[in-house]
Each structure stands twice: as structure tokens, then as C-alpha cells.
Length: 427
Ligand SMILES: [Zn+2]
Image 1 (cartoon, helix red, strand yellow):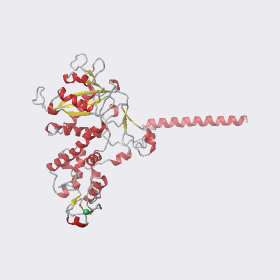
Image 2 (cartoon, protein in one colour):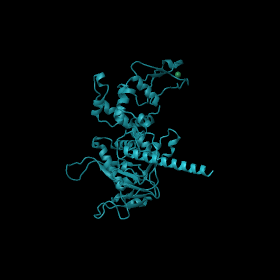
Image 3 (cartoon, protein in one colour):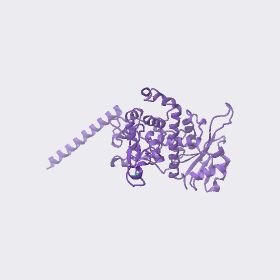
Image 4 (cartoon, helix red, strand yellow):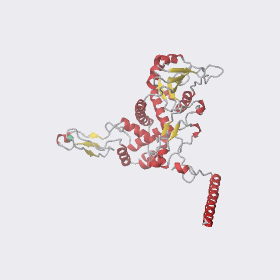
């Protein structure tokens, strides 16, 4: 009895010992080979110590805990965790806000997400023929797949015509027979399309990727086969159609989300001028005043172009009221237009940029550095496009917000564009 117990204890101890040795060996090996043993437990995209690199590798060091990826729902199937803003407010110690153009999604994309993404090769492979494009448009809900005759309340017949890609709807009953057919593109993004569908999808892809006209012309996979190049006018037209869609989509989305701030919350507000300098030297700048607002602990950036290029209280206060909840603590600089904010139900704190001792942070901690860092990002974004020449500056600002959101949440630009088009052109 006694010896048997001894034997068991001895055996367990021996087992524990060798398990410990084995674990030590594994850990040392993993360290030597630089393998993360824990990662595969929560990240399915992490296989054999290799992460899938697919998005521009912006260092995640710019991220702080304000956005956390919810990993708890991972085990429950294919649900992709959405980053949720944490409620903790971040002050200056929350991390450097000076460069604010890193993505929020603090992880590499999962294999599934990578496979869903579009690139040029996929566009050529999946949308390289007219039939593929029609099927894709139907599948994505960009064109109708059935239509009911208003008179007869029956489904109409789809008449395929040789020259039109999408065909037309026609009713074969009674008096309808003599009526003209309704093109399937009427009221859709593809209405009055004058170029081939493969080119339309190629241009949509190019717009989503923010390609320059030169790149669009050079990369055109169909130019040799068709022995002609896309004209700049055509590119311009289709880029404008795409932009129109995302501007409407983005505007409505802003309204849906509602206001930022609220009692106990801080919103930083600043205004900045966008445009070229009129003279090479000197401070005179011709351009547009843009008002920017961002809440501490959130990445919901609001931008508004000041009407008539005025930044008086009459212009700024209504814009602030449109986006910021009453009761919010607002941080601004000493621009006098903000002085009346307290009269409108806000707690107003200021930072004096011309204070020689500390031009960035007031004694009570008031600062506007996050919103100011946004300006650098916005200006850098538009540098190549020369935003000074863009006719409708407000549209470009909305386009920026759309692209920023896509980048921050690592969304696929092409699919997001299709979503916006679907939103605008309901079929
Ligand atoms: Zn009919």
C-alpha cells in the first residue's frame, strides 16, 4: 500500500519534471526561431509563425488603447471582430497624436479577408469579359434581376440585345407589346454607358485605388487588344460618377452616426486653410477654410468647409452645433470666433498658441494637438492631386473622410465603392 503510493508520487513527479523540461525546450526553440506560440490561439491568420502581410505595414505603435479589437467573439464562427471605441478618454499620456495616419485595426488581416480583397489581377480575371461584368453587377445588386410590369403586375421578360450589355425589360402582355422596352441600366450607375463594361469596372477599381490618370492609362489591361487608350475625358467622367456616389454616401453616413461629444467629453476644434499660397513668399494664402472636430478617445473626424470662405462666429458656431452635442467641453485656440461657445451650452477651454512658455498645452492641460495633426494628414493626402484646382472642394473633403475611414478600418476600397454605389442607386 505504502510502496504503491510512493511509486505513484514518484511517477507523477517524474512526469511533471519531464513536462517542465519539454515546455522549457519548446519555449527556448520558439524564442530562437522567433515564433509566437500564443498568436495562433487568437489569430487564425497566423500560421506557423507567419503572419499574412497584405496591407501597407504602417507601424501599429501609433495606436493606443482607444480602439480595441474585440476578440471574444472569435470562437463563435466566422464573425469578424469590429473595432470598438473604448470609453476611456486619452490625454497627452495616451500616446503621441502628432502623426495620426496609422490604421485603427491593430492586427493583420485574416486569410479570409485577404482573399476577399481586390487587386488588378483579380479585376482582369473576374471582370475581364462582358458576361462576367453583367453577372457580377447582378450578383452585387447594381442592376435589377427582375422587374414587374406596373400594368399587368407580372414579371417582365429580359430581352438581350446584341449591342447593349444589360439588355432591356419588356412586357409581352396586351397593349404592353407595342410599348418601348425599358433599358436595364435606367436609373442605375450604368445608365447611358458609352464605354465597354470591362472598362467601367476597371475604372471603378482605379478610382477606388486612387490612381492617377497616367497610371489608369498605363495599367489599362485592354488597351492593346482594343488598340486604343482610355481618354482622359472618359477617366474624368467615370471618376466623377464614382466620387458623386461616395460623396452622397459619406454625407448620409455622417448624419446617421449623429453628433460627437456630450457632457463629460472633450472635443478638439480647429480650423485650417487649404489652398496654394498666392505668392511664393509671405503668408497670404488663397484657399478654403475648413473646420475640423474630433472627440478625445474617438476617431470620428468631422470636417466642414466654411461657406463663403468665412470663419466668423456666425459661420463656425452653426457648424459646431451640427456636429457637437451641447454640454461638451470644447478645446480651441484663441481665435475670437470661438469666444461665444459658452453662450451656446458648451464648456470652452483655450490654448494660447502664442504663449512663449508653452504654445501647445495650456496649464490646465487644454490642447488641440490631435485635430492639428489631422491637417497634416489631410494636406499630405491631397498633395499629389493638387486640391487647389478641384472645383468642388467640399466633395473632395468628403472623399477624404471616406478614404480615411477605409484606410483606418482596413476595408477593401473596391468593395466599399460598390457599397456606396448600391446605396445611391437603389435598384
Ligand atoms: Zn405589361
